[in-house]
Amino acid sequence: MALPSLTIRLTRDSDIKGVAPVLPYYGQNYWDLKRQCLRKGCLFTDRFFKACPESIGYHELGPKSAATQGLVWKRPKEICQDPKFISEGMRQTDVRQGKLGDCWFLAAAASLTLYPQLLRRVVPQDQSFNSEDYVGIFHFQFWQFGKWVEVVVDDQLLLDETGKTLKYGRSTDENEFWMPLLEKAFAKLNGSYEAIIRGFARNAFVDLTGGIGETIWLPNCPPKNLCKRAQKALDRNSLMAASITGKRGKRPDGLYNHHAYSITKIHKMTVGVKEMEFVRLRNPHGKNEWTGDWRDDDETNWSKVDPKEKEKMQVKKEDGKPEDGEFWMSLDDFRKVFHLLHICHLDANAPREKDAPFRWHSNSFQGRWKSASGLNNPDAFWTNPQFYVSLSEESEILISLIQKSRKDLLWIDFDVYKATKEYLDNPDQRKRLLSSLKVEKKVTSWLKEKNKVEDRTESLKLTRGDYLIIPMNRASEEGDFLLRIFTEKKHLFRKLEIK
Image (cartoon, rainbow, N blue to C red; front, side, top):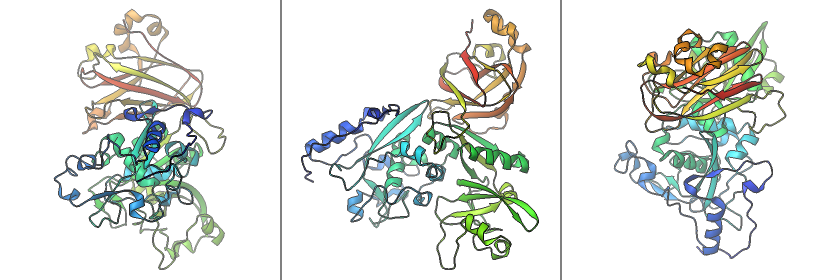
């Protein structure tokens, strides 16, 4: 395909004031590659993520699997006459799941559309199929272990056997392609499409925002506390999703087990003489909604609500109209049905839709276990890396430990102790003094956890004072990690010397 020879001013993100530079994934610089294609008059073909079976998967979606036979790759201009990167803005209804089990990522992406400032960092807006400099290359940004990376992809997308329908993620508008291209970039970041089957929404939130992901086990969370925590999270611009455990598949109530639903609103209103709390959720399938009380067409319950209040809640289900995947549930039903609530807390540097009064105070440290030991070797436990945190007043604190290898996962966790002056002032006596410290949080996850996970996060309420955080893995294994803390109030943070 011959392209016009043009002299075009290409702006780098690092040229824009206030935008932090990002690292090119695989060393691929979007602007340099685009210039090369313009100069040669050709379309970009990604040699690191080729339009081939290996990019699809390795086992369930491997080259010889039945699920990948007959699939074809096409560029959007071969799929429709007038492709758009973004058509009339990016909305949560743009996100539709295809034949890939990556609802955890799509639910997070759908939630991100409610925060345009965050979304614009992940999905740069300077991209189009109609511009003079179109060469079939697109770029996206993801957070990885403390740094933002830029992932470039060509626009060859996977279609089903008919050669007409996208196989995986798509937009409601068949001419819009930011969603399937974002999904492709995320698949490349993880190695293949199959690599993003199954996961936790909190991890996708972290990759899309750089925040700290927290998971709450709902059966153990009292209703009043749940409503307070959820509303508090939304007020702080946190992102949320929920999921249900149990045997995979569709339930009698219209929902799916092991499927992530994004949470977009918490609402209180009076029904009769009773004040009730409600949760608005969305299925990334764009269909298959809750069929219980307060479903879109539940005339019995919605008739009890003032029409203006109903309109405010945007309940617009009409006979003959297709589902959009969004629905309301009472908080009581939500707590009974869902088991996991995933919250992503944004750090102080995250873009805001408005100048929110609350911002976390954050700190992080890149570390490595050289001779780390955990519960299996208590005599060597003190040799783990140790971190000091000082709080000048009572504060909520989020502690997140992420291991930096996703291939060879270790069992990881951390302990939190109240640090004494004697312990801090005597580095050579820490082995002896450690057992005398008061424990604020002790490892318990290994006793219940069947699978190794990438990260551990805890939310604690700590009083004024000095504290010690010790990250560990269960066995004496080497590995790299990232430790991060978010606090409501200001804090001091440093690594301690181990002698």
